[in-house]
Length: 173
Image (cartoon, rainbow, N blue to C red; front, side, top):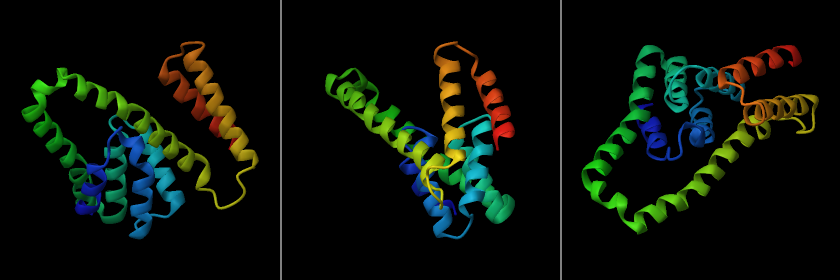
């Protein structure tokens, strides 16, 4: 489990949401979780404080192997980022003002955004085994649109958006 989550941690550029689909593939390939269990654990991980990848790894590890699995998965997903940060700070501190380095970092933004959008679509819609055009999909899109509208147009606090989306989910589902 440590090695699997270390592989996931190495490629987790862009934050935890960018590796959700990779996590799902690995957990189902090893038989640790079914798709519905994975989605439930990621939902809980997203509502808990802290990085979603770390929270999800901890919950998956605990579900699969108890406390030792939680420790192994958490250490595996956190260790690569920690090592990369320490090495980058030690080696590249002077290079961050370099125009080429800045340009390449700006070039990574659309790629990371694309990976996050793919993960959201895969997690929210494409993992269904039935038709994509269901009332659940319509309800999910309505909740998503309401959350976006509340955040962008009405400047609602994110906690209010999360709570109201949860209530809407309880009512609709």
